[in-house]
Amino acid sequence: MTRAAMVAALLFCATGVGASGEGVPPPDRAKLRAAYPNRKSEAAVDAALAWLAKHQDDDGKWDSREFMKHDPPGGKCDGAGKTQFGVGCTGLALLTFLGAGYTGANEPYATTVARAIGFLRSSQDNEGCFGTRETQHFLYNHAIATWAIAEACWLTGREELRANAKAAAKFLEAARNPKLAWRYRIRGGENDTSLTGWSALALRVCAFAGVEVDDESFAGALRWIDLMTHRESGWVGYSMQGGQSARPAGLQDAFPADRTRAMTSIAVFVELALGGRSDNCVFLPAGITAIQERLPQWTRDGAIDMYYWYWGSLAMKEVGGKPWTRWESSLTNAALAGQCKNGAEAGSWRPYDPWGADGGRVYATTMMTLALESAYRYEGVFPKPPPKKGKG
Image (tube, rainbow, N blue to C red; front, side, top):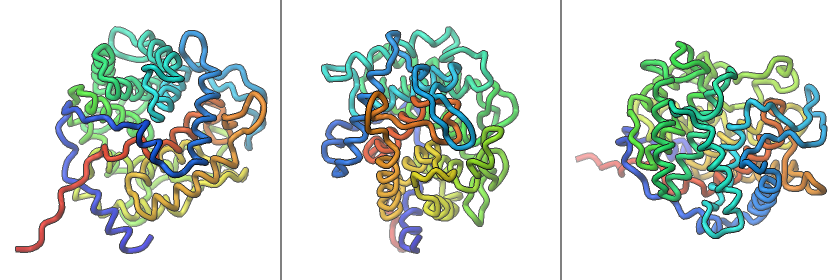
């Protein structure tokens, strides 16, 4: 990265996360999509949405249990994923339609969106948690569903959804470890960057929708990122400073952790989405440089990491300039190379990444679609600092 790009990145840093519950005018995503010049990328999004809509269950969920077998590197994956992630996959799928500007009113996917919202609402318990708590990773399901319902509320202004988002936010806040962040158990004392990213952004969107959120949740997430950031390299670890991203057991060789910058991408985006802080902004350029060293590429040698590409797309779009231009070009090429073109699979992506066996084809397709939609999904939404005043 050039010095000019680094300076530009620094200028994105603000001095605070803003008041919670302030509400933010939603973007007109349909208009933004129409103005977006990358027609090849948008054709891929359209094909993916068509595939997702076709494979939604009658009750509104996506569980990805119906698909043909394929062999991703490192082991077999039948495209089905695990049923324990149905709520999370449904939240991701709903976000893809919302990301493209489909909010459920007089449009081709109105029924798809309405059924997805209905399923998620029906999965929320009386304490605000989305989905069952029987699985170790239930907070992932909850955080993703919270993000999706809050975004639906933000875009539509529906009061009944605000009630769901409010209850979900309270549950998420209650799950956070005091002074820090989140991991798998409610106030279990352990933290990780991955779940912290989902949780912090879910609460940020809740605030956009007018839900009051405790600013200490944002402050705790930023403290955790500080602890995980290696000051010289800019790398951000999963649970150890400057460490590598997690990998499923048995897939460490197939998907080397040094090929990804997922946690660093989460950290950069969280910093920018929450407004950043002047005391940490000096480390952002190093993190951005680290991300730029691992641009998306569809090669079956362990480089495919849709989770990284999702967060990397959000981060690089917020950074803007040449970092985003380079990332966007590589992402589009990778997405087009990997998207299925024929038969029943057309429009989807096969789950050829470290987490494909967990989330299946629905996970793969939603993450790739959301990555492409990052070009306009939060255009002009997150705060920028006021212009710096000259001396004197």
